[in-house]
Image (cartoon, rainbow, N blue to C red; front, side, top):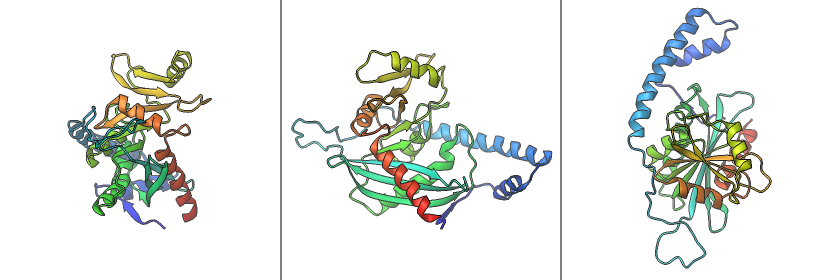
Length: 283
């Protein structure tokens, strides 16, 4: 059962996409209208991205500190780490399940879980993933926050990129700024940004003489976009870590390493597992 519908703000867009999807050979007039709409929509989204980007914080901006083996003292310790992910139906790519989990770092157990199955009416456009997925995930966070839940995350891991994005403002940045939460972006694929390519990064990572299996992602411009990391022994495929909001890259890497039992950090892995299971049980 679809519990909620995420709709576009432009009147008649839903009807347009139904016509386009049903037509065997879309007419040139529909194609032209679609192109004009996408161009107009992109301009709106660019303005929103630029506005939100002005609020982005790319350094540590939190009161807690990372847990260590040393005596902790009275300082607040990072304990509750959230993970969000969206899984899609194999039968209908417009149907998705957004899931939020919270992991207790002291026990490595999931202490909170919520999900929502939705029909997405916003199309995917490269560079604008956040406008399709963020509303679903933000609603789950808002619900938890409004209920004053004691496990509300101190930090959020997002299955998607942060600064490592063609416009330097990916899904993790978008969610972080709107939720005002420290966020970390963890991608399984690399955006080709500033001369960085997936094949080159893998070669450099394999050749790097680093016991930590971490490679800073420095573009042709000299900008550091994030880091590639082989997070588990024997893993040939790296994950790509980037700042989302209110955290430095060094802290983001440390927290990702702390939460990786497998290739993907556990909060995101659990969100992925549970969102897929929810979809299967709902079919």
